[in-house]
Length: 89
Image (cartoon, rainbow, N blue to C red; front, side, top):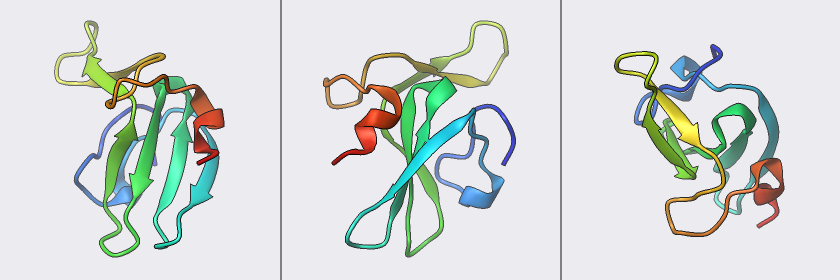
């Protein structure tokens, strides 16, 4: 894993995460990573080993063509995403 934001839909081992801060498991064996510097929670599927953004919003980085960055304090469902504390579900 490199430092940055990439990989949604692909293998988690090829993804980029920017300062992972904590992890949690659900009852199905999926695990969740608090991607602190990108202000998102990433989910790794236990059945496919693919990674996706579980909570948080990503937007195009104005400084890097084609790259995404996390948008702090928002989640895809309209509720706040508060970094690693969001893993207490």
